[in-house]
Length: 305
Image (cartoon, rainbow, N blue to C red; front, side):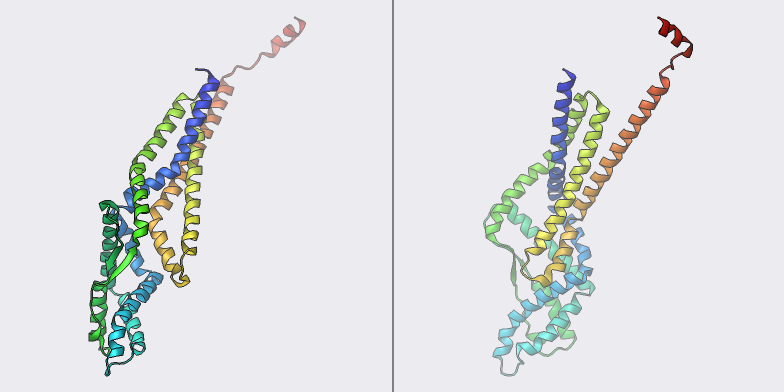
């Protein structure tokens, strides 16, 4: 095969390989990190200590409790108005978010949410995915009762299904999940295969390795930029600005592994490119030092000839 054709084919294969790097990393992250329940719960566990997340949970749970108990209190002639009880409920819920029981409930709730969403994506049924808040409500009621808050025993511990995934979004997410489940394995494998083939057919393999390394670093940088843009778009799309810090903390926790992979791709690509450059310089110096110098005594003879 002519040298020019080999170099062109190598460039095309390496370019395709580097293009697949960010997509392969993203698909593998979804398939092997985000879909795995244990890894998901482990990634979300530290958020139980985050003040923004605690505040968002307290607001949501407190509002749910007041919606459930407000009508009952307002209808009773001997009960206070729901507005008078609301501060006690909010304080109790916020106090509960700083306890070990909340961290246990947080892990259990995240596991329940993940299992519910994953089951909905896999079973093929069209329904709204919901999560029951009754366990958290029971914990808050017990805390209020122990603090002897008036009428705390009136709080009903009912199975309240909170929607976490609308039915109209489920079909679209299911299609994306099916595609990513296949792509999570084949995209990284294809990227490695294309890179190896491109290096093998190149006329100068050191140059091909350098190009592959730089392309890998560029792919990692594009993936990192995508995560930054995705975070801004996600937070900008929230209707309640007060919950944006909590949503940002959740986004950062879920994408921590992907950000680490991005930086590893950048560091690995630049390191390999630097090593290739240094070895190329050393090889040139060795060739230059191995070339015998011309004999000055022969110059006049050559001139006369």
